[in-house]
Amino acid sequence: MPNTKIKPVFLCVANWDSNVGYAWWLMESFWLQIHARFQDNYKVAIAYPSISRLPAHIEASSISKEHFNFRVGSLKSLLDHCRFIRTRNIQVIYFSDRPTSHWSYVLFRLCGVKKIIVHDHTPGTRTRPQGLRKLLKTLRARIPYFSADTAIGATEYVKQRLIDINCFPATRCFSAPNGLPPLTNKIEPIDLHTQLTRHKDTLFIVSTGRATLYKGVDFALDVIAQLVQREQIANIHYLYCGDGPDLQFLQTKATTLGIAQQVTFLGRVNNIDSILAGCDIAFHPSRGEVGYSLSILEYMRAGLPVVISDNPSVCEAITHHHDGLVYEEGDITSAVHALKELIADNNQRKLLGQQGKETVQNKYSLDNTHQALIRALESTMGK
Picture 1 (cartoon, rainbow, N blue to C red):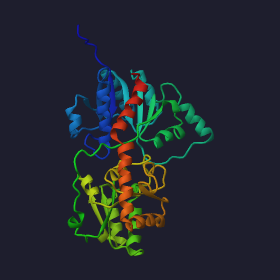
Picture 2 (picture 1 turned 135 degrees about the horizontal axis):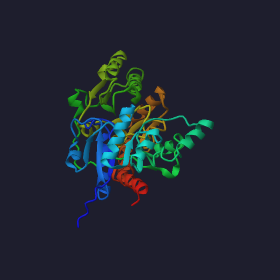
Picture 3 (picture 1 turned 135 degrees about the vertical axis):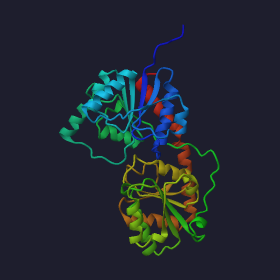
Picture 4 (picture 1 turned 180 degrees about the horizontal axis):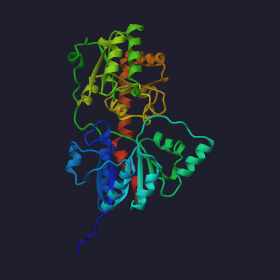
């Protein structure tokens, strides 16, 4: 007789609308991997707080799509969560960027959840707890039912941060270092000189990401202003690809600094690989990442030398004078010196760019990311 037993649910929780874009394509690839690996024993579902347009690969899959905001904000929402878990027989919850310990996890478990997994992609550095605070955090992380079963870091840096800052047990911590898929088709570079009516000798310095002050774009503008005005370097143009809440402020700042003619804000683009292929240097001034960012890997995959700060949450993927140059965080003179070195030396740009491309291929492939994720989940779930 056929097995008619209803499968328990492995729930993947989305934090944003189904069409949020940006780096959520990576999370979506994780959900697809989870479905492929565990579908024999679990019904895999995604809970979105809102559903506008589903990504094509998610819509085409047999993953169940649920409209449910998985954030506890009130007693009523807590009761709604309990009802949602019980009626759908949810036994595993895979969170992104949620606490490793939380009182709501106790109630989720009482409603039938057997495993809670937290995958941390949050950027930046943290203050290491000391004394009594460290002791309390250590105890909290070990209270049965109160803490996640497993914590996964988006990089080795985040994994260590989970251990050092969250005081989460090292034996239950894993890393699934973020990576990129290979470019399957030949990328034709955009002729930026023609498109932006720049002289043929112009070097394009590019940054990408959300247009926010946290990404350090204001610092980048200060650096470009010094290169143009104090160093008298006329053959450069700075491109910023990305939109965000601080875009208008940054455009105004470029005008105030007197470099509006040397800066172009392209906004959100759909052809980033072609744009990067038409550039010469990548500049990533972010004030915090997860050790590195997908943008940094995209620069390297495109063969661009990367100029980056020595902030440990940002520079993990770059080796100084191997695939990029590292400057002292917040130091305009240091960043100017690094960029000047690359502006002046075409051979060094090509060498560092080629070595960065090889680093991504060998160390930061998406296949490696997926394999590390599944190993961590298998360790939690049992093979």
